[in-house]
Length: 379
Ligand SMILES: [Zn+2]
Image 1 (cartoon, protein in one colour):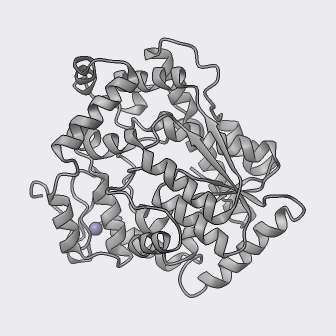
Image 2 (tube, protein in one colour; image 1 turned 180 degrees about the vertical axis):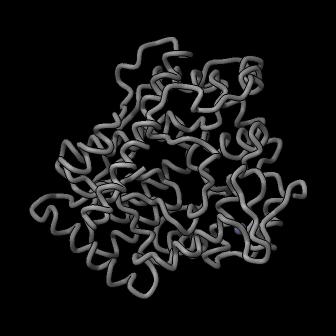
């Protein structure tokens, strides 16, 4: 194998340690995304029929209530466009925003633009900053790649807790296959693994986590889906989702403004994805997003390669964002640099629930084989 080999169809490369090059057919990543798209009943010819059935089901689930679902909104493109489409389809979600402390000014204005347009209620859950800060520092000290777990885990936990408390059956989110269909599983572990999060914090944290919301294994895989019957749902997968068209539609119909880069809604996520992961772990998430866009025909491979040849960060913006992160985490730039150069670790070097997950998957497959039904599980 040549050094730095890139797939001939998408732009995935050897930064995915499990990549298999298939010659002119592409690689295992784009190949399996293409076949998933073909098998996927949610999009394609039957998409609109499935969409209206699902929308009806959501509406019927809470007919007499003020809202029929919960929609997690960050102010970013995906969740904002999701809100716009839900409005068009006549859904009445409650907007739930989790303030992790890293909102950019544009994100705050964009959330307001969606509220003004839809007239929906917004519920904001503000995380305790001292605990968030301690968790962020623990993750930095741990040396693992996924530094976004403290934000992601809290967001999903708050959404589930809210839905459970208010007996809401559907959690709508802006996740989608069109931009996230390709994601190498070796890049990083699951954000939902609370056992992993607690162990990392126990090892490197300095304060107690008393307010930070977590979701246990039993709650995530049994209580929420089977007892409370809560279903996370990605409605963008029911339509042809094109990010460029979505931006135009949002900007034309509402006061929403586009971001210069993906994840411009969170100051930390931007730094994490567009600097930290690239320089420290050689993982460029633009690569998987662009590859997904190639598979769905939204961008050419040549254009994707041109984008990848440019550094995502202007040096001045990087300096400004680094300064901001240090100030916010109340550490010096020297200390921050020290954390960015610690020995690299894997999330599996800490306690995790992988073996419980694998055991559950085993019983799921066994159940499917003998009961002849498809059991849906979310990761
Ligand atoms: Zn490929």
